[in-house]
Length: 142
Image 1 (spheres, rainbow, N blue to C red):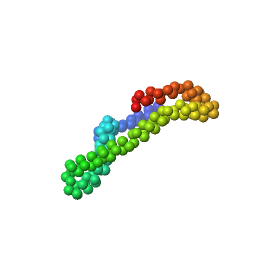
Image 2: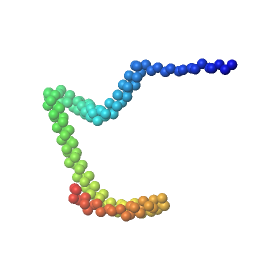
Image 3: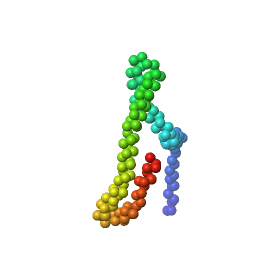
Image 4: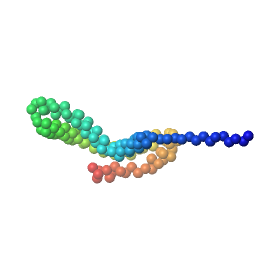
């Protein structure tokens, strides 16, 4: 009796609605990646609005119109930021110039420290032969 076993077929059906959901999800992810810069700008704008709105509301209660209150708050914030930059940039430039002057000595200290370890011998040799004459040209950039 050589009866053949019946062939079983498995049928998989995917509903059109499921295909649309998958395609919609893929499109949403693709769109989110493409619009990332826009979403970041919108997020930052909303944070700024949420920060500034209470100050504007206080000025509005004191009789300022909304436009004048916004302008006042932005002028105050811009002045504060400019003052911060005026106070912070000169010390940063001074510290950067000091780091440039100290770089050869710091490099020598690092080479001396690395020479203690066998695994760092090649790195210490490369570091010792590195040209550290960028401090002389840095003055022309500042």
